[in-house]
View (cartoon, rainbow, N blue to C red):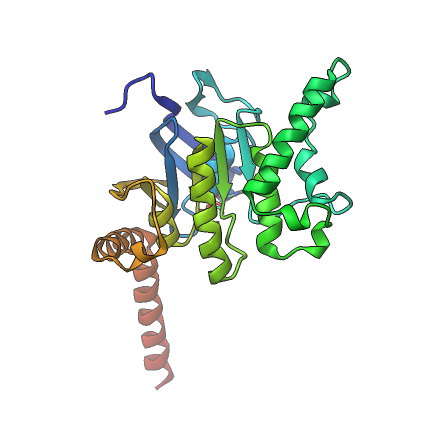
Length: 285
Ligand SMILES: Nc1ncnc2c1ncn2[C@@H]1O[C@H](COP(=O)(O)OP(=O)(O)OP(=O)(O)O)[C@@H](O)[C@H]1O
């Protein structure tokens, strides 16, 4: 049980609907979750179980009518500099270089009229440190169109980290990358997370990714979107790719996959499909 002191995000009885009438969707039902400061939590679950909705609501991009989300002790009622988001699409400014993209932020102190040269220097130093941390030194002056997908996503992560957010919210950030680049990004994001001591909430479809990165895997279920189970990941802070071959890792993977299969409704869909095709065959005889 976590104490009130070390909880960074508290989600209490969160309920969310989209649409109205026949098109009304119960996207989240009674979601309760505490996330500790410095924790890395991953969200998995069948398509449509509300992972993105939950993340976007945490980010203040979606309104909610019932329940409460508290971050740093204050209710979330919109986006804030304490929570940065990274999406699957890179959303970089094509006309800015890598360094300029990282520095670009409306809330940067040096964009204020009363900014001092020390503010500007500090921001420039932070950007340079992030360029180095993300392994972007050799492309610091390149434009997004000249970069690979993995490189672009590194820039997007660096930009999200620029203002030292307390919480990093990531929605399938590596979903569009090839398997090899994804592995590199996994180790990079774990390294950055340990160094920056950020709290991370990470949405993914990839169960292996969820277990490798997270300290806890939250399995969500659809119709209505809800938390099905929370699985503690017992591996330490320093992880290497060999971990994925360990029997404990495989056991966890099986456990998570079983929950996703059990809650996805796919089996029922298949059974219905089988029944339907059987009837069609019989009536066609
Ligand atoms: N803007 C919207 N308007 C109406 N319904 C929406 C909207 N966004 C999401 N939904 C619905 O809410 C439910 C949850 O969607 P959400 O995208 O959060 O799920 P998800 O788990 O992230 O799905 P996926 O894994 O396929 O990305 C789904 O039924 C979806 O159709």
